[in-house]
Length: 90
Image 1 (spheres, rainbow, N blue to C red):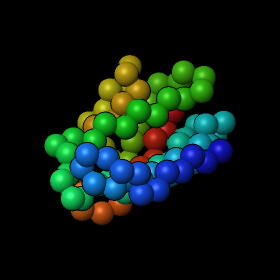
Image 2: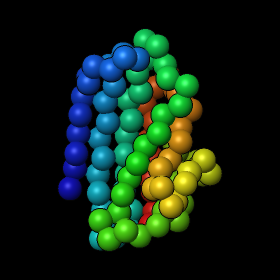
Image 3: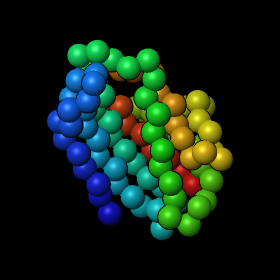
């Protein structure tokens, strides 16, 4: 299953994302195109597993990422000037 949003207007500039769910195989992948006109201080992404499984690990642009809250199902990201790719394992 894929969810996509492109060029969404925000107070920070246009943003977009694509979320590809492979929840049955224990992972969700996302690509975030953050706003760059006025970057926010923080981007918070909530990716809920359909069977409420907790987040086990996250990689951002291929590197381990630890700034997350498994109970709230959120991942906190620093603003970036380019696309962020995430892989969330449940």
